[in-house]
Length: 388
Image 1 (cartoon, rainbow, N blue to C red):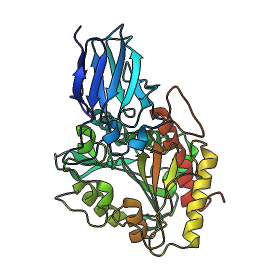
Image 2: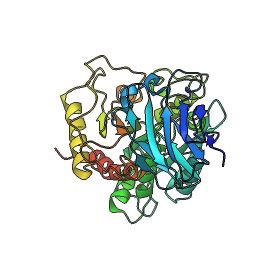
Image 3: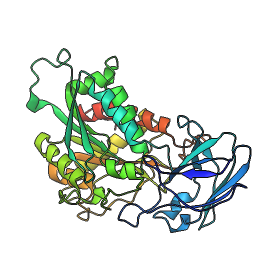
Image 4: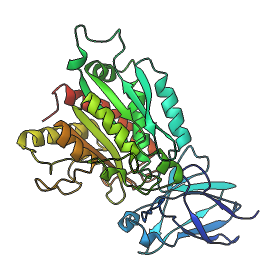
């Protein structure tokens, strides 16, 4: 068989430098659309069954986050259902790994992919639930829908006498950066549990609050195999202060709906290339941040770590000094505009340092379970019962 390397599919990204039938393969990661960002890859290799192969990404040292390759192992699958890790080496310039091809086709990716086809299935399943209202908030530059779900209590479960004005408003969005596919796996886990009518915490949260969910903020970038930008090369998580229809319709339409509903609590779900931890980046640098708001954020972090040991609060980004927040970032802008607790969740592309699972590392399944555990966290936060 002739060797074939393919990335011409939903969320694919790789360019071939050289490929030998002997199994030596040199590749380059392609830049994001209209941008210099590059890190995400997703491709298949066929025609090498029975051979020991070595794949080298020769421009790994030129990527946006070269520190991300240190301690990183490649996500691998032979059936696109179960993804495991293949050990890799990074010499400062080249990321390489060796594997024995035991099947006719093997897939490799930076993280377990979550394609737009999977996204469509997720939306279809959720939209059929009785507690869900689906709406397309608008369209991207390439005319893909910005899918939005509003989840509330079933009429039979609603608290007697509770008015619409008294209901809390929870916003959860994900995947502003399309290469951070763990964010949509997180969303699937969150939605699966939230819509379970036999789950006490989910029912209690839906009785207390309207939950507004945008599982994928960047469908164009997802389809195109971008790491960080939409089809126009725009980093959406720098657009929240003044989004525009021309550059960032994704943010413009979502922010407009947020202004209609108000926000009591929000979470923006991401992945971090370098740090091997799950952690929250807060909006501490905004004007008006005070000890009371800081205590609430700390209590939420401690609560989540208690409920799910895959989450931790000792490692993360440095605190932004007071008054120096970038209001173009979602969590800072929402905390500033709505006076709410707005946070960014970061998950690793690598394995977690404190709770390692070497076979799969940080994975789709673990992302889903972390998402499911946020149901409890959100319920405790919105009912003022966070652990101190």
